[in-house]
Length: 282
Length: 202
Image 1 (tube, rainbow over the protein chains, first blue to last red):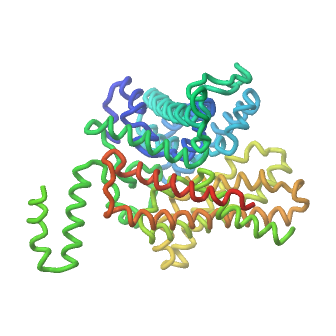
Image 2: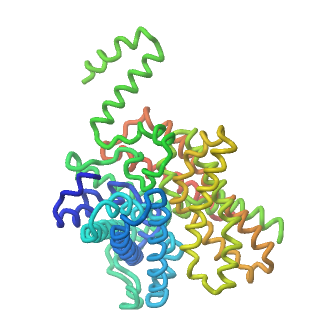
Image 3: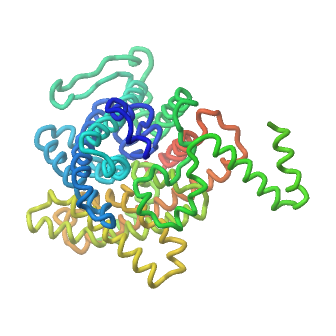
């Protein structure tokens, strides 16, 4: 993530929208994404709550990172984040009780949302307060945007209407705009668990398709985007080092290497001819 | 405290309310570490251990917070206790059980940020309050069972997922856009569809 440091303010802000979208490209913070995207209202509420925590924790952590000893920085970051989560939790409980009960367990679980700890570790502890605030805002809005898109798809397919809900007390009992409900009955599976996984898969595949060749798509999980990367034990890193491929070329090279290795195990004579046969395939 | 209820809690946590497949908790390690059966097993056992121990430790702490009237500190206290607990387990394993450490210990640092662990601790305090269950002892036993049951359910889902993924890797023609994470999510969708069949059991 070192290359981020020299970029302009605008690109720090817009980085989180598509190019480094925390959910769709970096694949972190998947639990709240799947759980709270059942409708646009809960998705937007979750996104904004997480954004508020992310901006505040990024500012505080970038201000404090020189004071915090390196060895205990993860517990310190978690404490700062947990403090802000508690504040948001209490504010929502007091002023927007309907959203507080809709988000339920997932509100305190913002603490362990990898997006927030990940940005603290990857960005806020290396950059100035202003840049960290912008990064937090951009990443948070990217998260909110993803939740709203997924919430829209799941709500329209699941119940046939769009934007239904109380809207934090502003429009109590709003039935939503009918999109599909005049034509077909709602597919309630979409608002349930399998629908969440499936819509997430499709949205991610669409982003892969649209941003092909333009950004680094993670073909697989690895250590590179994990929040715990620097505190992780070296044994585990060695185990996972094969999975840290971020671009296509490395993946291809790995595939070829793996194929060659398998062949060499199968028969020594075949191993000698393996590179030749692969060149022919290309 | 009834024995039937204890069995029901375990069945509910493993099959009906399976954490990754029915409640969206612990999705990150469920997708990330289910690459092969060995690492799925290691992660599953480590998560079961930590979730059980975290339930044992955090439930009395919640009673302490309640008696002091500072239950709003729950999130902060719980996450710090879990982080410290994971650290202690890791240090203990490294010193006393080096063989176990090399197979399980490497997954431990990842578990602090596993939302299933904090999730089970918080839902324990909501599901089994002393006032609702009757006595502290019974509530405590239910909470511990829910912790271990949740871990077992996670382990079970991990093993199924890892089994499917080892078959997925080399024998299938996956559309280009779906390669990598999307196909894993689609697999998880089908698995969770299958787990919905358990929903009428309890």
